[in-house]
Every structure is written in C-alpha cells, then in structure tokens.
Amino acid sequence: MFELFVLGCTGVVVFIHGANFFFRALSHRLTARPLSFLGIAGW
Image 1 (cartoon, rainbow, N blue to C red):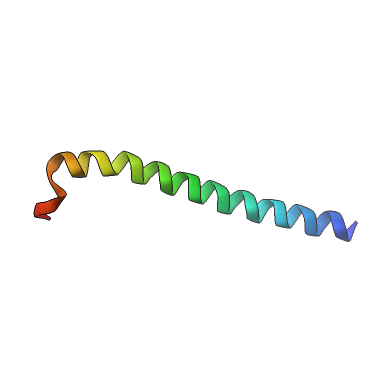
Image 2: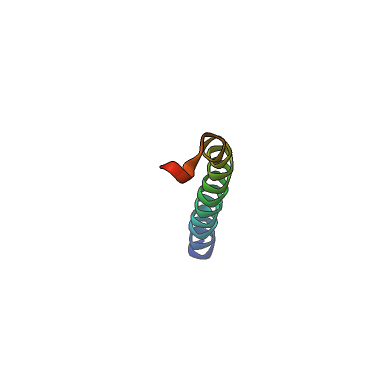
C-alpha cells in the first residue's frame, strides 16, 4: 500500500512538472509572436 502511495505521489509530481513545462512552452510560443511582431528590439 505504501508503494502505491509513493507511486501516486511521484506520478502527481511528474504530471504537475510536465503540465507546468507544457504550459510555459505554450504561453512562450503564444506571447513570442505578438512581441516580436510589435518589435521587441526596441524594448
């Protein structure tokens, strides 16, 4: 039972890290285009 608990916690942590990385990459892609379109060089 303890092994299942540890496995579940590890799975949740890995899932959260994966989702966080995915959303960060997604938001970076979505925000990179308008910023470069507006001209981030003058920022």
